[in-house]
Length: 280
Image 1 (tube, rainbow, N blue to C red):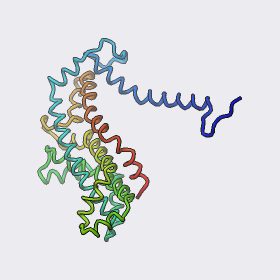
Image 2 (cartoon, rainbow, N blue to C red):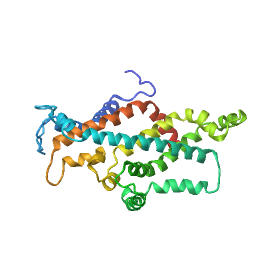
Image 3 (tube, rainbow, N blue to C red):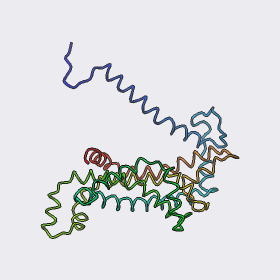
């Protein structure tokens, strides 16, 4: 009877572990396969007897691309997500660096403020944000969505980036000052490039937050041509019609940009999330 090497799992434990992983993967993948199957069934009207990939057709995809305003909604979502990401990275990176390196009056209350704002759901912030944006004449503009999404993303990303900046040795800042760099120059030329993993996580989170935002878009956008994807998809299923096939096809299409962003940022995500979660 052979002896088991150190760290080697028993066969039963290994089988049980793999079975659990397969089950978890099936639970995660099944809803996506179900939506994909519905998107490939022209004329699907909500029957519970969907058979995966039977009588498949791309007719639903052709319809939503040619007969609806999906591309307009897509462009609107790209604009909102892009500007929210840029503003979110700029504000959270500068704020996170300041909180990490400098001690100033109100330092700790500011950090608590960023933390507490995460506890309020969007429904509570909706009315005050609407009043502010309406007073500024920004209702029914994409600027209102960028502003609203940034108010949600910046506090969380500031905390995340502060933890990442804490992990960067302060000797680098001191070396920059010896070379004559200002604090802004030190941040931009030395610290910013080293924080790319944390910035990638920040960008990814901010992009997804703006990409799938529904609550503010429903309240702030009234024109059909200014709808974002999350808002435009609601037109397929209303009180008077249920076009599940079109909704499923459009849902599959809108996941592609988010998947591309994840593919680009994935190599930095683990390092950024780990640093941001363990420091602070």
